[in-house]
Amino acid sequence: MLSHGNLVALVSARRALLPEGTQPEREIVKQVLSYFLRNPKATDSLEGVAHWRLLEERVHRSLRQTELAVAWLVSHGFVQEIQTAGSARVFRLNEERADDAVRFLAERKTRIAEKTDAKS
Image (cartoon, rainbow, N blue to C red; front, side, top):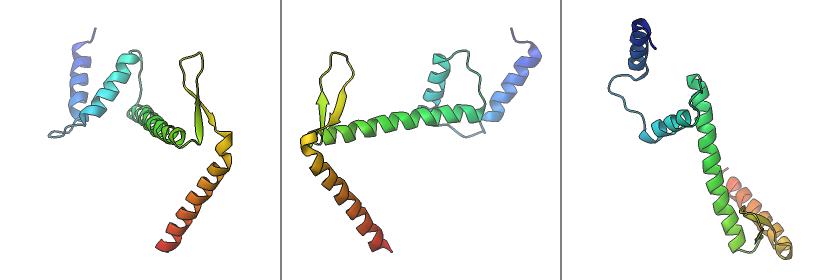
């Protein structure tokens, strides 16, 4: 149970953290609250909360970007999806298209180099 002094300090701290007239992004508020609900005994500094929130966001974004890249590679035949007994999707290089894959990577490097040279 909070004492009156601790309650006053808590309320004062709440007001000090949110400058008057400002509103945080709702999605970020939900992310932070969700973390504390999943980890009700967690205690962290503001920097710590920002660190795990950014890490979680980066992992989610990276997973989505990777999913799109793998889907593109499968649709173009560079990578094959392997059916397994488990629920996880598994992928591997399509060895029949390995030479094409090497050419594709070389082509991409050449285009990037050309763009870099054009900007210079």
